[in-house]
Image (cartoon, rainbow, N blue to C red; front, side):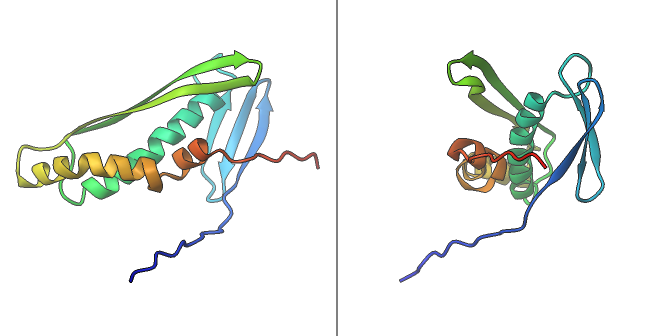
Length: 146
């Protein structure tokens, strides 16, 4: 009889968000990387766009790691769409839709990667992608003033 045990990775993740101007912020991760974000009035990504990018990026990484073992893709894009609602529950996204456009070479490795692609996408959605799982399961957010 096999017993599946859950493992818990309790390593904290964090970023620092620092105001750099009116409606503009610099986000820095623990490794020193940074991006700028804005309110959506210019070319910078808005926080909502970053959420969609995080969902797409997380699942894209899962799928790429597991399919590229078999074959390097000739094309690999992920589109993430959502509807923004403003109602009695506040502002939020609904109908989040992730679409993979992946093409592998027409050879044995490409056939193998193509064959596992649906299962790998499903595994990423159902279990592997931390960002997608967090959004779908819902996680309370605590706010503090220091």
